[in-house]
Image (tube, rainbow, N blue to C red; front, top):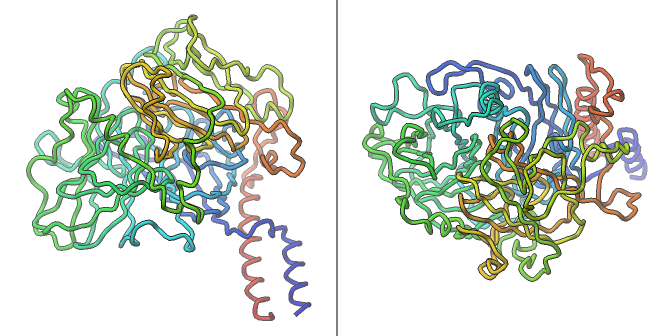
Length: 589
């Protein structure tokens, strides 16, 4: 017995893997170009492991995730994981303020833990407008078996990726913005990378459409992600009720919807029971919102819900979208109807509602105002509080580590200033363990989505008009939904509460790709000023960190057997050996 225990300990020490009781998941992710014709026009799209859209990555709460990304594009790339909080390790966030880019032909290995999280998320390439050409896929964090679901186990799990789509490449769309033009109306809406079913004569022949196969009487968990460029989409399934269950890692009060507005970057889980008579197939529809819908009618995604005992094809008109052209309260009421299930357990045994956010004193209020893009120094730019952000040449935390002066400035204005807009590298100097209120004031003409990396926040208020301190009286301080991406209606505001308990540098951005590309973002630098020799609040810089900007001279040239590949393969091999040896030794005990 003593010999067996000693042997196991020795093996662990030799392989250096007894750092965690949590399992690990390993993935390879190769970004490359392929030709596809989702709207009937051959075009170059970005595939992940040869697939468009990319594969679904399934992990479990608290698992360590190792993803080796190989960049076979002809330009720099990074992959980001919105909603995955990267606890204590913003080094892995996959945006330019935290990571140097992966050069063409290079690879890099992301290593992070999905600590205390569950839910529906997605990944995408974060640089150079690349998401407009693909590279996205679903990222699902399943709860541990010891934590019960707040609903019966579904009979199946279905992923649906929706998004507006252009037949122009992402580089051509980038060129349009660089020349001062807007993107114009999209060419269509894709559902799981495919164009619309031919529901009427406006849809040309020869377009491949998505079919979701189901069995009558069964209930499915349907996860829907809006991975598009800039268009809010109303999602609905003909003749079926959608029971909302979860959004971006938090269980919701289970409310029924016939349709739901899903804004750019948002993710939802619905429970849908196949309770119809299967006399025919049924339409799945994603259509644009907050636009002139009569002009945008052709920009509609249509897929087919096919019962295994269906008696015919779907025919007739599509199910109607919300009829609220003259009712501004509809969008607000629907948004605020999405509330947290305070009694359900999420990733941990304690109920989600045990964090009483409404009783915590706000330490700071930040008001971020967006306005329509304008010319700054001869170029079209988008701003927050008059600042159009330009990413530093040296990522922020890397600049801190090596004392690179002038890489960025900690002077982002926490309220709008009466001064001309400017281009800057201005970052929010946030306070670790602070509890802040952020007001997103949208004085632009389009509906927007805003996302915060590293955190989930409580959406306490949404309304039209100009926010004032009196608006705080309308906040939901009991069961507001927690999420990482929220809509801000045109001419309106959204207020969120955030508990700054995650040390690092975190991107706060417009999720609309055009506004993001034009500079509508900043970062929150949340740093523990106290000594932390044991890295309890922030993990150290990873061994495989990439260097760029002022630190480019420190970067070694990658070879075909690169350091990232070696780290990935070695970790995977060691883990497999440990599992095998542990199984053998267990027979001795």
